[in-house]
Length: 222
Image 1 (cartoon, rainbow, N blue to C red):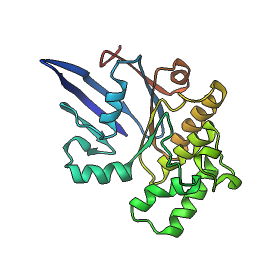
Image 2: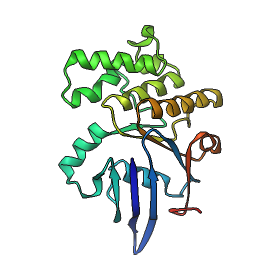
Image 3: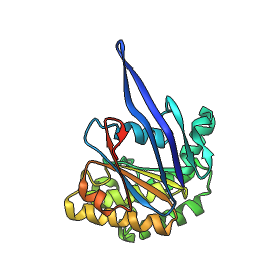
Image 4: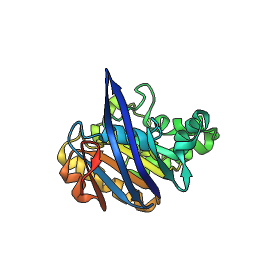
């Protein structure tokens, strides 16, 4: 469960203040695939950074599974991001010199999980997202865009996070592959009992979501 209570983010631009996010409140239950949609400059990226604890709000609170992440210190936030939040990026952000399997194992290594368990879970996750065993040891350059995004999704699931944030997850994919990825995210939200939020400007993705939030000028539209 994600609860956002009246969060705002203000940036200083020269001698004026810019309110990138302005008093946003929302709730998303676990097991739900939801979407935050808005045009470029609407505040989507800033809101995603706040939800992912990559930045702190100027005011307001964010709770994930009952924990108030806005009150955590820097050290605890680093650990929290690593273990409790999964990120999926438009450009996949896979490590180019690591195989698909190694990319998925990496977050678990940072969390201190032993090699055998890392390898076994990474293999299961890759199979779960539709990567066949013959591609486990391929590096990202030898995978299609859709396959790279599947690996990125598996990596996001590695530490069993309760919150998964996807930034334009279909932005670099053709429409057919994009639909498959959205279907996969919807399925994983239920099977993993995770709160999955995709930030996008694509109405097609919004139509597939159980909950949709429209962001305009940093505010949620009615």
